[in-house]
Amino acid sequence: MRPPVEVSVFLLSLLAPGVLFTMNTISAFQ
Image (tube, rainbow, N blue to C red; front, side):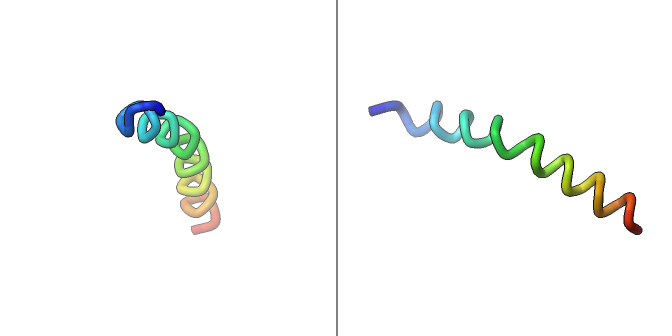
């Protein structure tokens, strides 16, 4: 099994672009 740290970093690397994209779209609609 992979260490939880690597799994959390992997998930963050996947979620970070989506969060930034949603924040940009929300600020654009405002």
